Length: 240
Image 1 (cartoon, rainbow, N blue to C red):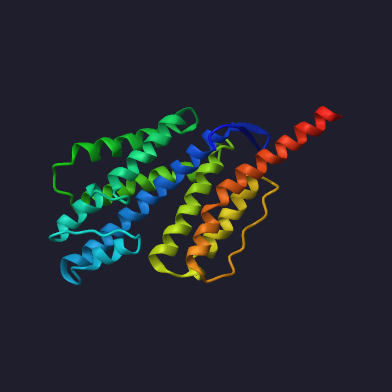
Image 2 (image 1 turned 90 degrees about the horizontal axis):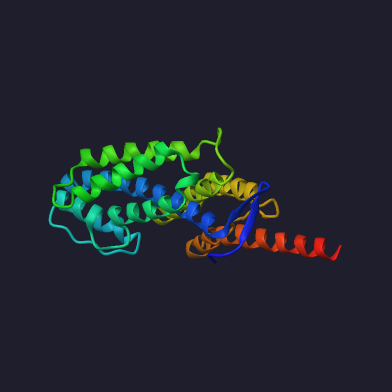
């Protein structure tokens, strides 16, 4: 669904731009969350449970192998799997480049700084201190793009991506519907701002795969319903 124009708060935005902002928000949130999980799991791997890292990634449907605690960090950042920090940051940066004209310069430059650091450190040892510094940088980016003050309405797509990613990861990692009530409420508020025809999503089932499918489909509902309403209004105007 790359083409088309939708309206949000009276502002026209292409579907492609909306999706890229949304996925930028998701990838930044994903990187920050997984970095925190990496650091926490490292503490267990090093002196409590050597298999804790494998258990962490199993929750994401990924098999990971490592020789020791530091190798675990290396595999988390540079491993050949879909949850590697390097890959997630690359995806975030690609979406940021395509929407740079809408993004805060500090946020964009901070993301570039992280990306360049990651690329330059492929052959180096990955330390917990390095990851904690990256977490601080991502917290800065999330803070910048979460603020509504003086921001264009398009930023709501970034915030929607952040909230949906939080819902998704909390549910996968901690396996509890009751833990994501705040994320669901915030997601519905943002989706409603983007499309006032949006009907809030209610999660009543403890079926986690079903809940994940529903929440991950919210962005399509926001965009499709928005475009459908816009096209209907245009048809009525032309007939009038």
